[in-house]
Image 1 (spheres, helix red, strand yellow):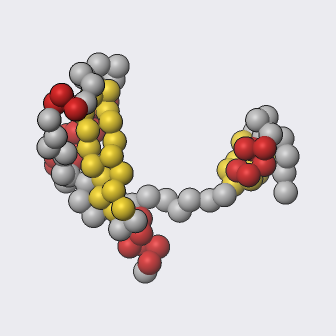
Image 2 (image 1 turned 180 degrees about the horizontal axis):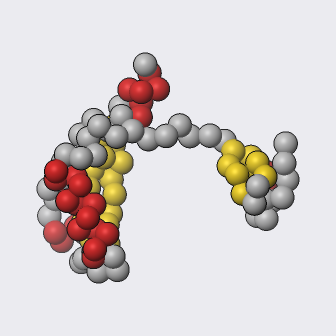
Length: 98
């Protein structure tokens, strides 16, 4: 239950209402509200106008409200091998395994 609560978007559809001068031109800011805290996203509408508009449309439609973050693991798969993030941080090539 806690995992589901932790990863559920509570209120994704609330766009931040801040002064435009506070942000760089061409950026759209979206506030993700989760049970673990808030995450502010800065979307660059000059470099990715279609992606930014699609994301904002998803937010405004409420489509993303019931979505959740997948669990965060301390490992990842690359080139068919399992790597631990602490080893990847120690070794930029990520060749160490546990």
